[in-house]
Length: 616
Image 1 (cartoon, rainbow, N blue to C red):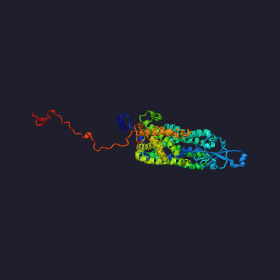
Image 2: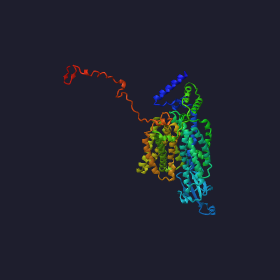
Image 3: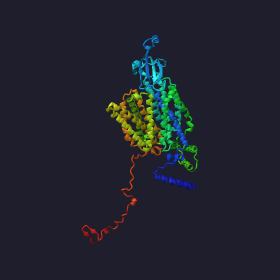
Image 4: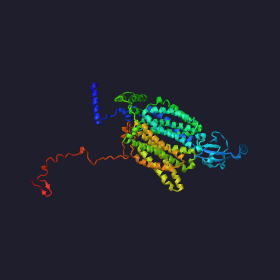
């Protein structure tokens, strides 16, 4: 009987292979969204635990990525010059005059006193408004021997005041700003490919261990060169943590939960950024702040034991035995009895022959037909979104210098705009889908940019300033959504076997967009208008390209490159259903085949003709 059953199964497989054009259908264990996850309870107890483990580190990542604006905040400088000898000053302290106030477009109340030699403390009286004047980093102010630093943020010391990075050394501050962003960009590219090759869990744990080493060493830096180098490696490791958690969050969720699970992590990260000024006020020193941000990563070391590998990735790379063990672990933790459907499903893992794991490198993307086009469009979209966001922020500060001169006002406005844009995006994605929402926000970004560049300059001053502020806020609101939605959209469209590499590409593109802000600062804001024009043109082009993208809402994630390459694009407006078709179906056609069986009897004797009746 067993032999007959095997023969019948082989015959059925051959028939299915012939019916499918020579290819065997994929086993049920490959259908993760439709079969595997529902059998495991969908969003079960164990899945919720894993999602919580991916949300908690989002606070630390948000703090680390926003700490640069505190560490590298350019202080105001009060320059004091001795006009006489020390003995004369002792007898006539009134001749101690304040000669300069070098501002960095920000203001604050925290004072740090340092000597010109770097680190010597002075206790000079506060200058009167009449005895101080506003200077730039001129040669006269740079020759001051006694300086008083006024940091706009809550810190009393940062890297600028610690190592006197002003005047001829001010360019080192921009290098320090570059270091974290460049580390993030390269880290996204490298760790994304590694996550596809060695797994998500191993990359996460290695990134956590190294971020502890480099992050704590940053707090012990003895010069700006050491700070910038270690900050680069810290950004590299932070990229690995962010990317692996982002991918795990998407791969473990059902289609209807994917977007909201990702947005919860975004809200948590932005909430951490809102708490950063208060944390800085408590720490008072940048080294203590850096240590407090990095030390909680120690609690992520046990992730090696409690954080599982991606079940979806194991199935996609043909690691079926490891996937079977993980499947049983999920079922046990969710308290699902191994009976009925689950018991019948387990043999699916043994149907395929034992083969070596089939892992794919991101280079295979170049040999696809349409998948590389989708990822390219989203990469350009994320680059444009984050790049033009900086242009809108710069325009907002230029138009309203009085209100946005304060460090905290500017910081909190940027964060609140980001939170509101994500909240609105959550609502619109549920109504319009990923592609429709992305198209809407891209159109808003392009309109705000073009109107600000072309219309505001021709209006009167009392109209141009308010309109420019409105366009800048709308542009920041829309561009923030464009960048974040492009990243999520790319993670859904990229197949599981190269999802880490594809997500790394779009995140690196977003990093390049963010890099434009320190580049413009390095050039003293020269070329800012040209940057804005280029990004505005790219936004217009992106509007056309978004129409070529497929809609992924409610769809299963592609597992292989072939799945991603066959993602079909549907029109925005579906075709109307015709109740009564113009042409009848074949079953409704009447049979008139018997009419011409006897052609000689077509006309009878009594049949009428044009000239009358025809006789026999």
